[in-house]
Amino acid sequence: MVDLVKLRLLGVWFGRPPAPEWIKVNTDGVALGSPGMGGCRGVFLTCRSFVKACFAVPLDQVIAFEAELLAASLAINYVWNLGWHRIWLESDSSYVVHLLLIRSDQVTWRVSSLAALHSLDLVYGFPGFSYFQGR
Image (cartoon, rainbow, N blue to C red):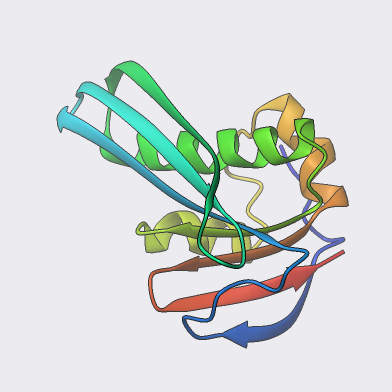
């Protein structure tokens, strides 16, 4: 379980590119069926929209929400492991964004995501609407 209490809401951003010291990651997850074979991916972008990194992971039997949540979790793990400490995470799953915003303890986060969630400045959102949160 993750305790996201250390994160605080700092403002709301509408469709702007991230500041130069930030990395934006667009995540997505999909499942063919419910459950079904699926996958998730993330594309990391600079303030000039250049691709800095990306990932794609095939998944076994999942539902779409699991794939979306795993994409967000993997993105957080990757930025932490790459030493980037400011991330704008964008997902088309408003429920994933909601769970991050309400600091839900109902979600079993990957252990390696725990340290990252407490130490990163994060922006959560879905296309066109993002929530900015910091340490």
